Image (cartoon, rainbow, N blue to C red; front, side, top):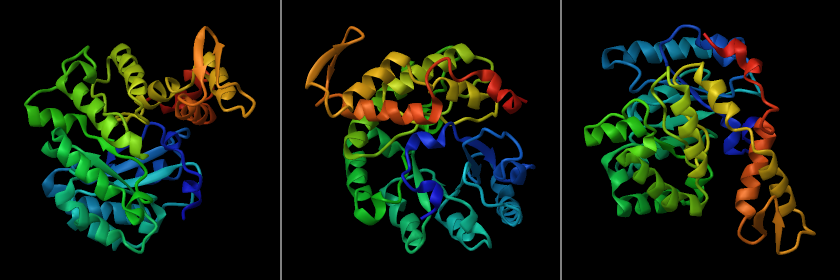
Length: 311
């Protein structure tokens, strides 16, 4: 297994930066020469690339792979357009230099077309839930059971929620100044959380597409966290620090999390004027501690530290 993925926590991916697979400067970003504090990146061969440019995009990625150096601090993924493109990507020399693949439009219909190709490899995957089946509780429950197979579940880092694709299916677009939770997709997110999270799957937060509304972005991130989502997709480098700074944990929450994981802690106790119950707050406490390890405590993480990421 890739050393970066040993003892993996979904919080380690931070705010994955999506970019077209045919953009310039991919090698510099992949090798950490640009956006030094970026934690993860996704090279897209799907929605960010026109159909007529797919072939040249795959060739471009193949050339860039030759210049990828080993790095322990940056996760690198490719978003395969479909199973056929995944096959072509897997044949590229140097493909072992990426950590895995994002699988778009994922459902049971293309389940085996993707996973059969990945047998015998060490690649991890992040399937994206963004088709009409997402609105069907029964379909999502069946997909969950398929993903729970031992040889499959260990390969899945997290499930991604394709907010814009789901809105497109409804013929709507998120209005400015409103969070995704103020649209019909808010209900869908809550539903996916209750279907998948109790079974050990992490889910990521949908992209925020407006680059000039930091206030609404921050409000949405708070709601992402309240829903138990991990890692919000970034579509611009300037979004990364805004997202990751919001992942720094509240100091009082961190103190409560440490106390809840203390073997000597009583079954229930009062702390910071909140009831803390060891038996029911364990998973919350573990998530808070994992977040703190990656992002520290609030006010300890300064946006100035990320200044070089803004463009």
